[in-house]
Length: 134
Length: 142
Image (cartoon, rainbow over all chains, first blue to last red; front, side):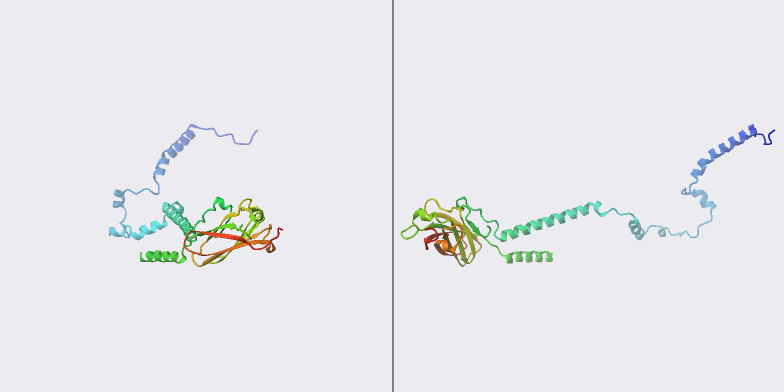
């Protein structure tokens, strides 16, 4: 003969209790979601029911954003890399073109100042051309 | 704006200070003298294998033609043709000295003919100079 207690028999009351627990849980979930931290309290109820905030200034100009605030906010914002700015490439292109043009200009000016190209040797001279440029 | 103008003026002045060079060409037309007592016709002129040209005065150069190139040795006549010398010199005097050797080298013992011409350098682009090579020595060919 076994000394262990016999297994509990599930009754109707237990089933009702479980069903009520599940139902209450399901019904309460959407309300918890709505009770988010970011929700604004309703102005009507807060104005009347809450104690007046003495720290809140009466002068609205004190609450307005100052130019300094905008500058700080702009500095805090992440800036795009310089190479993604079209002005950078435009300036770089102009500078590069200027350097190349200056190089060609100096070369051709120097070449022209040094007499330019020597004239080719005539065929009937049979290669008897000498001196500068040869 | 004034600084830019000043920079441009200085740049122009520096370019002007550099100066411009211009090529001047001296075409030395060389002929062997085959008159009496000189080279004995093509038989002797054809023994010339090397010619050396010296330039002195307003410019200096030393160049050589031949053997078996640049028209040497001559096979007909006594007219070798033109040596063209290019220079930037446009003032002073230029002296051209042509030396003929009847050997494949410019061995002084084989110098058989020589000619010289002095001209005034000028701003003219092309200057033609007639130069005659005279028989000056027996050379190395009997």
